[in-house]
Image 1 (tube, rainbow, N blue to C red):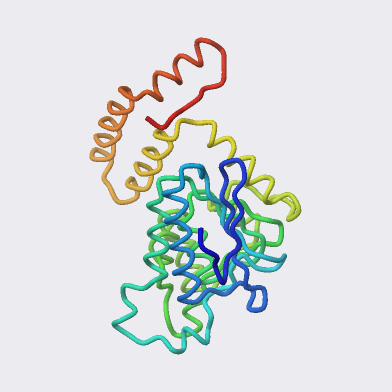
Image 2 (tube, rainbow, N blue to C red):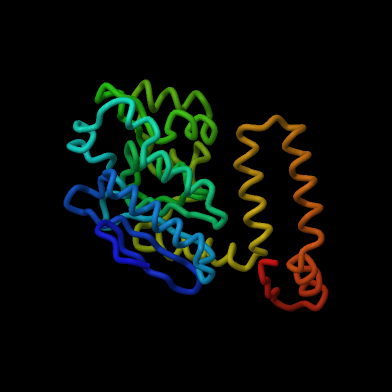
Length: 259
């Protein structure tokens, strides 16, 4: 993987950790950052040794404090409709590998939207989540008005976007937006524990399940159940299913091949 100006990349035991490294601006994101993140996600998607991705921020104060306001000021209308940030969030959501957001600090604006695009969120005790765009005369533009309502409900989405409510770490968990709150010093270890649990599962099953869960947000129940049924049938003919059954019966650890 080529070097990145704004991210640190570490790969260990099947886990790729992407760290936003802009402490001088509290990890605020600009167009270059989103383009680099998109490239990293594409790389991790294609890299066979990577099974799970963790995204976090450098330092102890911010996951991503939001968009770089200087960059926002320079943005203009129609050409930004199909934005780099929007494409990056979609790449994370569509990635076949699980993506965990490790919220080490505040996640405002684009940081909140980035966290929402990930599959799982784990938060440090001082983490905060907010979408303050309306105070700048704009709205969330990278999925905030859509993913937040689907994940946490329309009521809390309106409180946060219209009313400016900022959630603390425990509230983030209470509203179903994160798995748990942990001390900052154990945040990455906790994320790796969750990642290793997923690595032990069948990779085909994880990928298909992720797609079905995401599709359920936009699909009626009958269509969703039909898709689930077809996917279940396809996986029944996979080598992974046979390995999973055999390993269970033989009381040993499964060795999945993703086939």
